[in-house]
Length: 344
Ligand code: AMP
Ligand code: MG
Image (cartoon, rainbow, N blue to C red; front, side):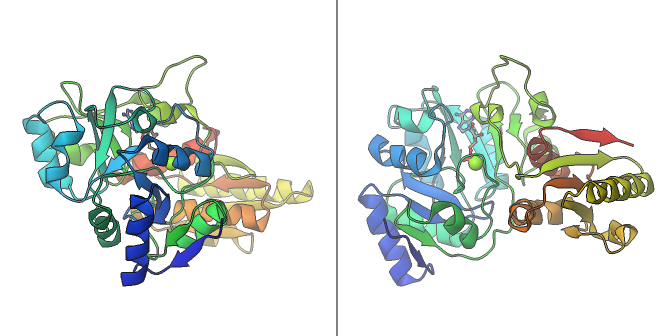
């Protein structure tokens, strides 16, 4: 298959809509990360997403809409007051809400669950593409399964060249980590995957929120997570990544020391550091994460991909506090490191 790589202009959007209507898969930008979309009402089309990604069949997809009016037919309950307030506050935007699904949602989307995650993205290209396709669009992140999510169209091409007919290049994604996934089927909204909309913001709108405790730790043996995606290896660079937390000066000393030992052992280390701490590392090989959690969210996946391109075989990363957007960052970084975390 030849993969076309187009700007989301009239020609690009028209081709995307035509392909989606015909049951094909299209790579497209959203404000979180790039998605791999197909007609959410067509199980055969959705199967092609799993094939292109190599995604395990028991990991459900999020359904994307371009107008609030598209929600109700996809779910089997009336959204309650809390859900309506959250839609008003956070949609369009990086929030996915899980509801009991209606019969319109094929099993290929829900991976056999009786619920479905719905998101109304704010990216104008995503909205226009969904509108033109005329159907809700099921879309996971556009990476090969296990790889860091793509935050530029080039990343999508790296993973999907020859596997999908079209990638729309809408530039770099603003948020940089995937949407916040919130289970709305219980009394209190429960964050299953942290993202750009924070648990604190949800609590302010809904009165309260819970964060699933599995977001900052590895799953126990045989443990069944509330969100199937939690059980898979994710985001990991090829090199072994360790996160170091604690007093910044101590962290700097510890990482510099590990780096030097790795060099002596003939390895190729790489340091991921916050802007403010970079000077500590002198001329060692450092990539900058940004100045805070929001900038780190924006840059993290690209840096993990870079680490592979550079051939780094051992990585050390600084950390941020796991609150606000920092929770999303530490969830992704933690999983990329298989939760190898050193406290100094
Ligand atoms: P991705 O689209 O690649 O960002 O992955 C979507 C994430 O949302 C995965 O971790 C899924 O397991 C999770 N997810 C999607 N739908 C549901 C659902 N109905 N219940 C629980 N988790 C879900
Ligand atoms: Mg993904």
